[in-house]
Length: 196
Image (cartoon, rainbow, N blue to C red; front, side, top):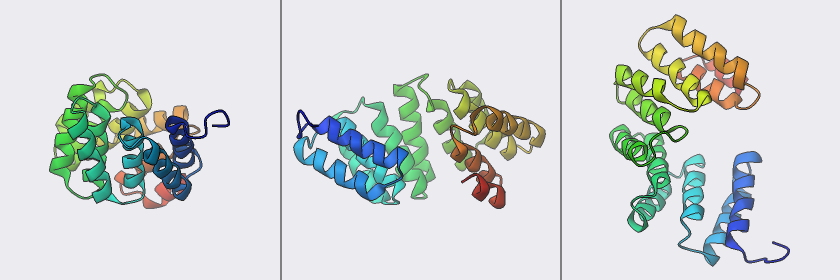
């Protein structure tokens, strides 16, 4: 940016850093807005702006950005991922499941592709199908997270606990939020807040 102050991808990177590493949504929004003023059709910037909207609880805005992305580039798998999250957190599980299925179809084997589909299946009451998806997840951290939840939904507590212990041993330092997610899903509020 010192060389080229108006380089939109670098400005957007500041937004990603603020969002994912500093938890500073206000700064992230400002940086994405600045980047989009320069490059309003940049898919990567729009995707990250949609993810920020989800994180901020602005689900309708996230849905609008996601739909715009799909309209512009219907083969961009991450547009469907953003839409799956936006609809999921807005309490619209059937639409979330549909977008998660499309994401996985467009990006088979991608990290979190099977886990996000498995999560949407869980929300839609399809625990057995969810477990099958979770077992296929390529990324170990997401596979363990998903297995912990799917086994719990099926009443297989020893398997759920084993996956959760493995998740804690291997990834607690990298992603304590993943551990908190499992505890929250299992209704263990005190443990979830401790991990958060």
